[in-house]
Length: 456
Image (cartoon, helix red, strand yellow):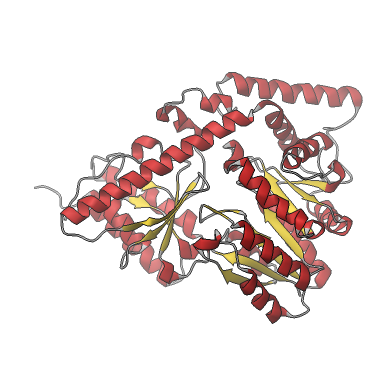
């Protein structure tokens, strides 16, 4: 007797289970829990001996990068060029360079030494590499204005922790929403008040000056930290320049002692001319002294697991604040991370990174074509579409941020299409907007370019 269990029924089962857990507060980390759910679906399908087609279960939840699949998309040498192929010639060069640096330190007694680094700022050579990169965008930071951290997450957490200590927990963390919501949670866990400012697509999801002024008026004299992601995750948009300029002016006027955290995780993924015009605003609006620029070797190098970032600031008081926190938390960052970072900056060419971004853009376009095909097939079957393709955002190549059709939420979308993304509400978007983030760093083109068979 033929089993009634199908791939779609498995999707339905796990989607309903997730829905119940979400309603009862059992979901601790929606993005990771969705990724786990996808793994459970795959295991059950195999246990039921069902034939899984590539597009039956497509996991677009986590903003990760899987270089093992680059060759599937037609570029057989890209993983090697990025130093991510452990069998490749570039990885060999990276390892050789790391050994050279260790030998140099052994001979001279300089960094990267095997003992502690008392100042806890990070290896000078690595700081120099980050400075060269950020200064290519019109800044003039120095090595002495740079702190190395274990990635952007711990780096920004260190800032929040330092501000909490300095203000006895009275600071307020302010950010446009939707945005990278991990920091909203970090601020709350540190006991800081969090105020989200709902933003709109027309402004590139940058908060408007009017909305920021209304928010800052509420907190009166309390010091504020404004968190900005000009190349925004999850929305795959870039801040509108005029909106950002006016917003920075409002913050400078109302919070002259406040801090602006500028997360540049995706800086290199947008055209450099656009990035230069955006970042120039921090100088022309006279807020650079209040700003901390945060950049990392992570998504830009296709290497999210390498936790290595730099925080750059002009204000000596901010530098002292961060150094104090770093000395307490770290004593010094791991020399292995620093050496890897130096070697990557020296050996991995910007052109190779741009090839990876171009590949992500191909995946974005393939995904949108697939979604269009799904809509068209459903319409032929007298069903309503599942997405609004006229509200899809793709300026940051790693993500697609798209509006779901009325009456379709992110779990319904998964059941109907096999594509699992993350609801915009996870990132602070309002439920009524019904947005979905789809990450394209893992699944190859072959999994994003074919229409599943329509079934009623």
